[in-house]
Image (cartoon, rainbow, N blue to C red; front, top):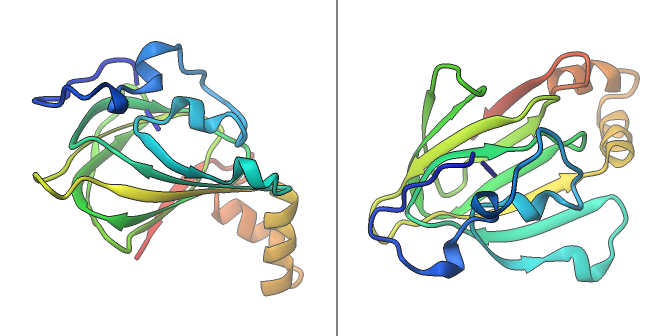
Length: 171
């Protein structure tokens, strides 16, 4: 998820070296290519299962991540913290940082036309592990129609439809 300059404190293990630091991160990418720009170790990836319209990844992150660019995807991105905690900051590039204190069980739902930056710091021994899910737009719309008959368009706007980019956090 994140920018082109990093500071890892005492971290020296190259397995955590971000792809983002080694390649230019685009402003937008696809759900299939999103894992190339993650700033952590991918522990499991659904790619081998060849699911249609669904990408699921289990990721572990270093204790400190500084200014990492998260490319936008057309597909909704759901991230659930399953291990750890952190002071987590996000912003539009060059904007004002918004701070969240995240912990196990927190869920972020993101769908935006623009990339955003994050940085975070976890206490020692509380490094973050997440499940990251991208749901194809057609599947997401079908699920919304099943839950909110006749209101899927309004729900897509709420969750960041192309005409109204936004990010949200739920607990």
